[in-house]
Image (cartoon, rainbow, N blue to C red; front, top):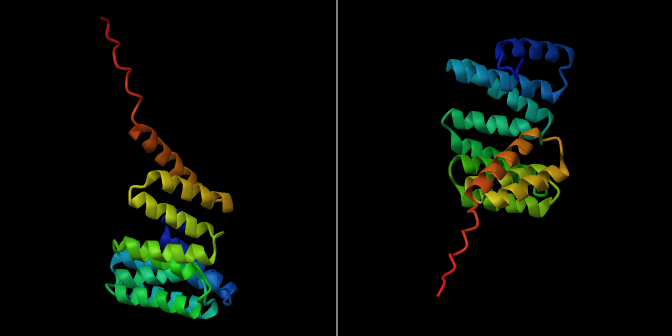
Length: 197
């Protein structure tokens, strides 16, 4: 239901899941995400407040929950508090100096604000820490694609798929980029006419 955009119905099932399994951080992440979608659509501050509370509960239970950090940082940006979104992710990175995920999320958020050089730096740090992180390679591909370096974007996406083949969206991106590359490649110029004397 969530995938179909039926957030109100999804929310009811997530609430039931909380009653069934109140110790599962994913339940609180899903609740936060559903409240976030509904609150943003209805411009309802109470729902946004509920979303923030659910995201924070999830992070209390699972301090390195990647999706939850992403959701909460986006929510803070949506609330007009981007500095808090960045501070949240930087604090996560500081508490986990050996973890690449905070840097990937910092790169994503930096890209949203057109801080592409900063994003590139975060991604390089993430890959230096964990060169086998498919999310980092996918984010690097996205960064390259946004900067217009389509050939390298394809290579980065393919590297990500080599590490995790279960990313259907990347197959689509690669296909689309290869079409664009084939269209932009100039055809061989015709041979110059031979002159007879």
